[in-house]
Length: 556
Image (tube, rainbow, N blue to C red; front, side, top):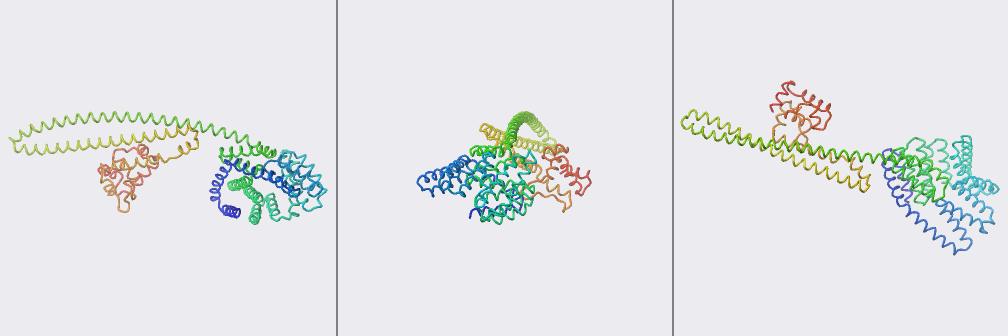
C-alpha cells in the first residue's frame, strides 16, 4: 500500500516543474538521512542474512536449496563475491548438479555476478556454455535477461571503440526484443518495453507504460521504474525531474540494501553541474564505499571516472569558503574601526556643544543682570520702561527658545548615542556568533548567517522610524502643511502604522537643508536615479511652479 501511495505522489509531482523542484529538495533531504544511516540499514540486512545462515544448517536438502537461493538473492546486489560463493555451493548440491535446468539457471546467475565484478570474459564463457539449455522456456527468458544486462554493461565500457560499442548495443537491443517476445511476467515485460521506448527516444510512451504497471511492481521493479522515469526526463533535457527520479531510485536501492547501483553516482554528477558540490562529493564517497564493499568492479570504474572531477570541485569550494571567511572577517574589523572613529568624532562634537552651552548660560546670566539694572532705570522713565519691558520680554522668549533648542539637542544627542551603542552591541554579538561558528567548523551555519539580511533590514527599519519620530517631534505639522501644496487627489498620505513614507522623508531631508541628491540617496539607502525620480514626480504634481514649491517647502 505504501508503495502505491509513493508512486501516485510521484505521478502528481511530474505535472508541474515547480512542484518537482519542491519535491526534489524533500527527497534529497530524505536521501541524505538514509546515507547517514547507511550502516544501520546494512547491519539490519546482515542480521537477517546471519539468521538465514543459521537456519540453513538445520534444514534438509530441498529446504537448504531454497535457503541458499535466498542467501544468493540477499547477497546478489550487496556483496558480489559472497553471492558467487553461494551459487558455487548450490552448484555442488545433488539436487542442482543432477538437474540440467537448475544448473543452467545457476550458471547464468554466476555470469551476471562475474559481470558485476568486471570479469566479462568469464561471464561470456558461461553464457556461451548455456545455449544448449535454451529449449527450456524459463532458461531462455533468464538467458535473454542476463545477455541484455552483460552486453549492455560492456557497451558502456567500450565507447572509445565506436564500432565495437555499436555492435554490443545492437546485441543488447536484440536481447531486449527477445525478452519482450518471450517474457511471461507481465510487469517485467512492460518494464523492458518502457526501456525500449527510451532507447528509441520516445520518453512519453515509456512513462505511460511505467505508470500502468506500477501498482503490480515488486520493490526491485519499482526501483527500475524510477530509473526509467529518470531516463525519460534525461531524453527531454529536464534535469530537475531527472534528478528527482534518480534520488527516488537511490532511496529504493538503500531500502532494499543494495550496494551495487548506478543511480547515486549519476545523481552526484548532475548535482555537480547544478553547483551543489558538497552533496555531490558526499554521494560519490558513498558510491565508492558501496562499490568497494560489494566488490563491484563495474560500478567502481563508473565512479572512478567522475570522482576526480567532484573531488577537485570540492577542494576548490572549500578554498573559496576559506577566502570568503577571511574577507568577511576583514570587513567586520574594518567596520568596527570606522564605527569607533565615528563615535570619537561624535564625542568631540558633544564636547563642543557643551562648551557652547556653558558660554550661552554665562551670556544669559550677564543679560539677566543687565535687565535688572535696566528695570531700575525704567522706574524713572515709564514710557521708556514700557518699550524696554517689551524688548526684555522678547529677549526672555528668545532665551527660552534657545534653552529649549539646547534641551532638544541634548535629548537627541543622548538618544543617538544610545542607538549607536545598540548598533555596536549588535555587531559585536554577530561577530562573536561568527567566531564561534568558525571555531566549531560550522561553515554552513556561518554562510546562512552571512546571507541572512534580517539584521540589516531590522536596523534600516528602526533607523527610518527613529528619523520619522525625531523630525515630526520638531515639525509636528509637516505632513499636513506639505500636503497643502497639492490638490486633494494628489495628497501624499503614509500607510496605516507609518509616520512618513519615502516621498515624505525625501522632502523632510530637503526641509532640513540636505538638498544634494547623492546625500539623500545615501541617507535613505536608495539609488540616485530613484531619488531623482521621486523629487521630479512629486514636484510636477504640486499646485505651484518648481521655484515657488521649493520656497514654500522651506517655509513649512
